[in-house]
Amino acid sequence: MADANTKANNAAQARQVIDVFHEISTLLNAELDRGTLSICISLIENGINPEALATVIRELRKDAEEVRRKVAAGEAVE
View 1 (cartoon, rainbow, N blue to C red):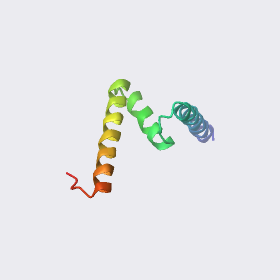
View 2 (cartoon, rainbow, N blue to C red):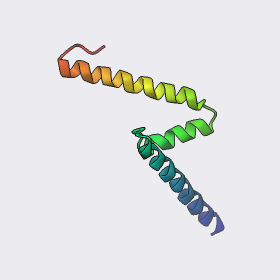
View 3 (cartoon, one colour):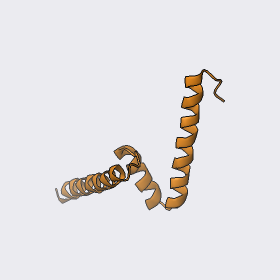
View 4 (spheres, rainbow, N blue to C red):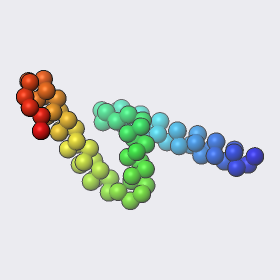
């Protein structure tokens, strides 16, 4: 029974952490949803450099915007 309670408490704490980070993300207009934040937190906890992760996210967003622009203009997307 204690094991189930521990798991429930850990899950509740994890949700609270994600909620706090999501609120910060919203205030900073970072446009990261809870799922993305959860993945980012896991990557950082597993040793990924936070600055490198931020750079990758920025580059992916830039690439996605370029693809959207090309699609809207009817251009070929590579």
